[in-house]
Amino acid sequence: MVYLELKRKRTPLSNGITRILTSKKIQLKRSDLNFEEVIKKVYLEVKNITDKGKLPTYIPELANVDIEAFGVHISTIDQINFGLGSCYDKFSIQSISKVLSLSLAYKILGEKIWERLGVEPSGTAFNSLIQLESDNGIPRNPFINAGAIVITDILLSNLENPKEDFIAFVRNISNNPKINYSSKIAESEKAIGFRNTALCNFLKSFENIKNNPVDVLDFYFDICSLEMSCKDLSQLFLFLANNGSSIIDTSQVISKSQSKRINALMQTCGFYDESGEFAFKVGLPGKSGVGGGIIAIHPNQYAIAVWSPKLNEKGNSYKGMKFLEEFTTKTQSSIF
Ligand code: DON
Image (cartoon, rainbow, N blue to C red; front, side, top):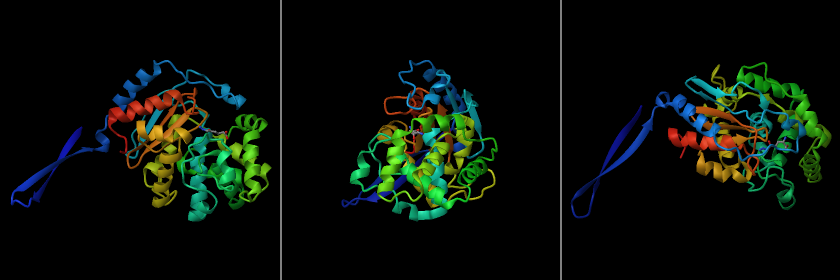
């Protein structure tokens, strides 16, 4: 049910007449949003459109996927869960993992992390080297590869057993012990990781990498290789819709302020040089990955994950973007 709240304000005018201003405010009650019906409708619509996207070719193992796969899953902070299509199939979350590595680094180091990277949209491709030279080795934000590599370096310096501790952090938030890395994907990326190697060495030349670049890259490829389903993703990311606190045991995963700031970064930087377009058409904080997944957050309401492997020219899921645009339009649930 959607209901209207009418607000009236009396404004005295200089001629002694009082004008009554009425402003309409539409309030949507969380439990009343008819997510299931809209998801079913939009899913079918988008499933049938011609997919103009292409599979990424630079990580060979990512091509080993069902190109027809299309899944969506929503989890609300009221604990409503609903999914369709390939929503239980695991896929490579790739850059979506950058939100998780940032969350852990931010939790450990607090505001100090911003001494080593910025919070500005880059307006460039995710793997671009261009700005690093003029920015003296300070990546624009934590979601471009350069920024995520610096975050990986921070984790390497601060975790006792980086690979084990990171996966424990992820499993703990989601209460899902089955979430894991894929060695196949990590190895496949490592074999062709020339650009990331260049980025990491370049960062090292500016002294913004403290560890051995080989170790940083190994851990970075492992983090990117995390595999999850849309259901796993929407449940895991609920803490960012819930002011940083776990929906399961109400513990604080990250602080409320950190959660707000990570949402702000997802809104402004989550889709690289398509971040403006995502804000414009979808209107939610979100993050994409070259595995074809997208997670989007509606603070205080829900997390929604979409997966379809073919990507548009900016490296974001073609059908995923279309689905989310229609979904937030039909549910009127953009944050703007
Ligand atoms: O480092 C890379 O290039 C990949 N492991 C991740 C890139 C990615 O997912 C960008 N997303 N849209």
